[in-house]
Image (tube, rainbow, N blue to C red; front, side):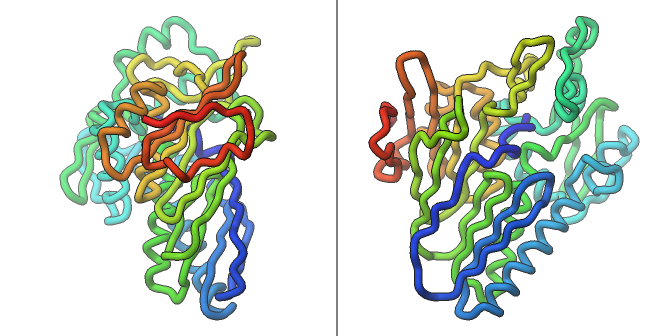
Length: 336
């Protein structure tokens, strides 16, 4: 499931100097977080036009996927009568198909269908510890298996099925934006939506700072990528404090409980929706299984940061080799 990463800007853009072409950068608020659109084109007018098209596409994604309101397409699906077939827009059908793909690939560790569980834990209003009666219900709550999909149609099979866009909505919007850029005169672009980042074009490499998972004000190391998308999950500043006890805000779909907080996990993937889904799903699996899972798959790279009393440790899949710089810090880095 996911309610996570979407929420904290873990990665900070460090653009390299480029005298040409023209680059414009816009800072806005969207999907409840900060949006940065950086676009390069042959002239300022083309760059601005491309940024407007990106913004329009992201607004459409928000209107389609937000479950903070009752009038989005996804919200209407969540309230549809059990068993009633609903015809989806091509965009929502594609979003849910991709989300289902990663639900299957992670063995259910990523599951956007447990929105009811997020309600039980009060993740959208500061958190609340469920009573024993509610916890006893957890095993009976459905996940994405309770959604029947057949091409452009879908139907809920359980009244408690609630699809939460938190695990894939930002990634879906970013991928929509990248596809829209192919219809513009932009030569390259970087879109940062609340710390989830997508790159477009064959421009220069871009360097990102990755925060210390125990103190977001401190930089642990830097990553350099030249394509694809990044997403990070962790609990810095997002842990739930309930009755003076801190819980992770990332829930295990199988147990219904918050997962152990081990640090942060960053995913680099070819597309933003994959990075979005997997940063949470692999966090649920834990660092060892997450690294093993990614090591067996092409196009998915994982970086795990863990803090302990004797220092900070970074472990990454081999695709990150040569792309991570500890900047002289004491981070112990290893690859698998």
